Length: 404
Image (cartoon, rainbow, N blue to C red; front, side):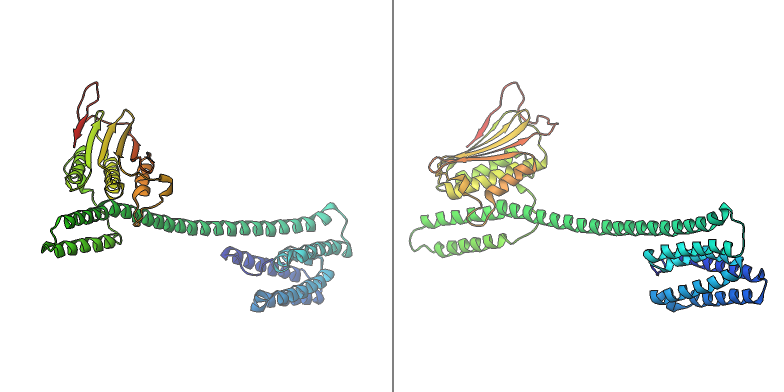
């Protein structure tokens, strides 16, 4: 068995075992019928005391084995002189099991039990079942106690390791969740920056280019416009580096339909811009802020992509309220593209992936239908929550309001 003390409980048990062994040796000495027996008992006690209090025995298995062999030899001498020496066999079992490996401890216990039984025969005791049962039962109890405690200790160690692993795993999981939250927030902020600052600065550049084309040659305003366009371009690059929370200003003080209508007005007013029409279909219901922000941002991104890339003459934005879902459609008659060939915005943005991510985050879907030369249709559908209260036009039919 392992020499190291397992716990304070084992230390107490070991001291009790030492006390028991000393008491049994004292009993054998007091019942001795001659000086030789007393000397054998005292010699056995001296050998036992040296090992019990020697640090070398606790540090070295080899020293412990030598001490145990000397103690067993002294005990055998006492056993040969007095039958009372056999009572010391019981604590000796525990010492053998504790100090020796299992492959040597069990045979040592068996030999000690056999020596105890033989002592009855040597001293002329009558053969009874107790002669065999007593030492054998004591050996069995010692083996069961030591190995039972070993099993309990190993199980306790395994449980302690599992607890430590669980604590470490919980800490790692918390760290992973924090890291995932940070990554998700950074991605969200990147989408917000793309849909607001980046898109707005891109529109400013387009408007400034249009203004440059309308200026007469040699105009004093040309350098200032060029400087403004350059500043907008520089700030567009810088905006992609910003990581901060952004509020949805388009929804402040109004509804989603009002925000979408205001979104269409500047696009239509720009020189050379396509005609943008906005309409609402169905009976409007109250939407949560998350739904309104998602639909507004998707509309902003889709319209910005149309203005920048499509070369369209007309864009139609339709917000449709159905019984179980709300849909937003952005359709243009521009140049179109191949959706399967587009993975990310060519200028490093998050246009289509951002729109899809917003739709998926609310359990919805986004589809893009387009082909070169055939225009583009972006459609997002979000499932309505179980509770939705009408907030706009009421009636059996569908109410349609348009803004151009």
